[in-house]
Image 1 (cartoon, rainbow, N blue to C red):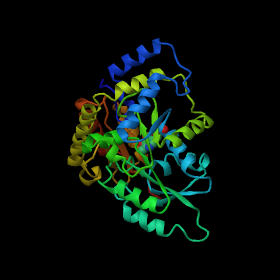
Image 2: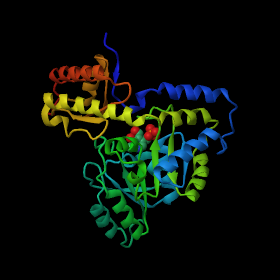
Image 3: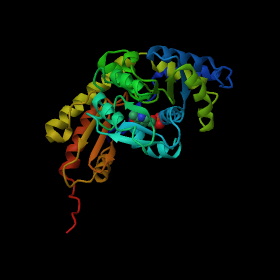
Image 4: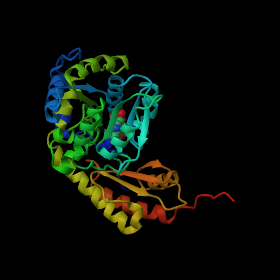
Length: 354
Ligand SMILES: Cc1ncc(COP(=O)(O)O)c(C=O)c1O
């Protein structure tokens, strides 16, 4: 019986042993109340703020919450933001964006998921007419999940920051997987976040921290973020043991993520050999997207793969997502390729209306 190879998300990477140890040790100590008085939480926030070049940071339960706090603070209900069509804030998070922040998203075409300075400039030129909602924020995402973990082109964030500020807009970067961009480009976080007024970072995806994300920004913004986090029910405490694990999970990340990226490249190479252009472009980081042949239904293929102990996610009815992470080894990659070959060769045709 093959092992389960779980490619659904890098959330499934598991906690690195040293992080687990740090968590246990911290949990044995006296907990703090967590109103920004926990030494592990403060250290995590300070260290990552320094790494990313921001004044301050706040530990929050999820990246969705970090994003939604940023929307609340930079916008008012009824405002609009500019974002690439398939951004997380406009797709998986759309209900929160509308329901919690009351913000409309003006979806713009991006290149491999990324908004370019020219597209932003053109949209800004159209956003001041009478009767249009005020546009307050430009939303970037790096790496871009739905485009397949793609990297933002160098210099785009800085250029967008400059022209947004000239029009009185702020820029938020959803950097849920900015750690993968750090590894893939060899650049530190700070230049990767250039141009952004605020940044969200996941700690529990490829890094393997047990839970949590960070919201980063100017000191006053983070002071207000503490209050909004509480309003939205995210004032989690005590969480020193989770922060201690996250601090440890930051160590050795580059080697771990490099291995994930190499495996994604290998998976893509084998799928491209078998299915040609359906395997799309070679991955920049740890996400491989496979477009299904016309007529096959993603949910049916996912079921077939599950029967072979391979778990993948259907992003939509024609796209499967495979994410590599610390629990995906070479054997899991080979298992996935074999299972996909069999699933697609035996897939029944979707019924077509007569
Ligand atoms: C780009 C991006 N932003 C935000 C999120 C939300 O993260 P969370 O599940 O921690 O809310 C995700 C989740 O996959 C994501 O891919």
